[in-house]
Amino acid sequence: MRYARKALLILAGLVAPIAPHAVARGHNPPAAAPHGQAPAANAPRLVIAISIDQFSADLFAQYRSHFTGGLARLAGGGVFPSGYQSHAATETCPGHSTIMTGMRPAHTGIIANTWFDQSIARANKAVYCAEDETRPAPAGDYVASVTHLLVPTLGERIKAVWPNSRNIAVSGKDRAALMMGGHRIDEVYWWKARGFVTLDGETVGRVAAEQNAAVAQALAAGDPGYALPDFCVPKDRAVAAGPVTVGTGRFAMAANDATAFRASPRLDRAVLDLATRVIDTDRLGHGVTPDVLSISLSATDYIGHGYGTQGAEMCIQLHQLDTALGDFFTALDVRGIDYAVVLTADHGGADMPERSRQQALPLAQRADAALLPKAISERVGAKLGIDPKGLLLGEGPSGDLWVRADLTPAQKSAVIAAAHDDLISQPQVAKVFTAAELAAEPMPSGSPERWSLIQRARASFYAPRSGDLVVLLNRGVMSLVTPGKGIVATHGSPWDNNRRVPILFWRKGIVTFEQPNPVETVDIAPTLAAWVGLRLPPGTMDGRCLDLDAGPGNTCGADN
Image (cartoon, rainbow, N blue to C red; front, side):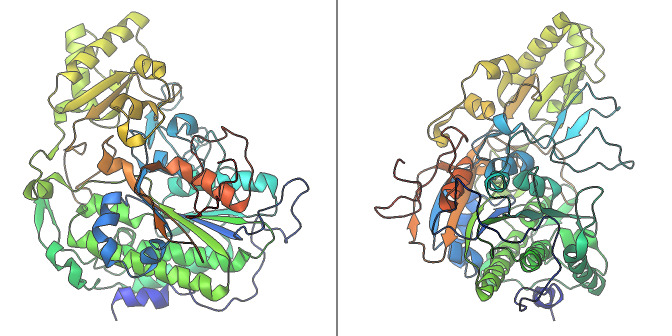
């Protein structure tokens, strides 16, 4: 029996009958809504927000005709095929921070997956977006935290008005779960190492322990991999990227290989199975006020990085994801829960340059090592007569750069000017903006596909954390300099293949419609708020409510 089928049995629980469970952390018995604001009369009892990591609008369009499961169901709802993560820093943490806050990274404070803070005491000045750097952690590890998120999520706003509502998040990544769930969260789980964990100092509880036991059983069994669907056959072609060859994988898993488990469709199945266990244990959707369940599915991202987006591996992944989501929704139907779903992504992606060049994109290339912070530091340091060691700090050949903090103001200004001139002269660089330029730029508005590069970068700029310079590479230049096992492609650019994502809304009885004009992921939270009847003051969020009625009515209210 192949693992695609085994997963339905080993990672089971999707269609099991509801049984009595112990009360989970944060759960309160249903009670009447507080005086002053009640949910809408027809509000769904469970709001499910799903993010598929690296699920670009391009992938949705490419495979849409092959979907027969959960993604096909959602494509029968309110479809916005041109959603935008409108900012420039198209990474996992910033993207997830927009979905349930309705705010762009300039306001969430989540400017990137990692930034540099030279004021912290430790030797390593790099700060991970979902860590609490003030708390001690074992060597090589960190304490996962949502402390850097500056604004509340929709789940938090709902709990503030209706305290008996539950706000829960599950994911394959800590940063995804924490950015979608927020600070005031009843339960949060993410994958780490060989199973699901939760916040430091708290136990995972029975629900995650049961899921981890099922995962351990699957890991111990190993698996030969997945069959190739007929429509994936044209994708089944080997392509070399540096020292590795990809394009023909089937996700075979040796016994106890947790790395192979994570970078495969198995991870998404496990996350959805855990979500179902949480729904049962906490009886989500059975109270008088709406519960919120945020789910981030990470395997598409791991596979996009490890194999690219146009091989047999991604084709298998999207087929299995569609099937797993179909099983998840069927499980909710069996339970009779009144639920509403939105599905989107934290960012898009691009295929590895080696295959893109074979497929009519000759400009596809990898970034030159001359764009790495160390190389820039050496050139600028030599020009100005300043010690080049750590002169410019950054994660790679694009994004934010920070000037070393021990320089005099005059030296810092000289370094910024010299680095700017050096970078803008490089043939792979599109634009270089200084922090002063970005701070002076108004926050962009209007249709996001028309935003200039400085407007896209402005939407990611938060002065207390952003760099002294922001580097944007040309279209087709991938910021991954050297490919290797598990990392042949990446994202993060300001171009639309990384910015465009689908946004799909579904609820039983919804009238199907498709709106091809651009919207933003920051529009999701105000749309869901209106759907459940949560009234927010004008200007609370960067996004706007999207009318999901598809007729003369208006789900956003009479004034919209």
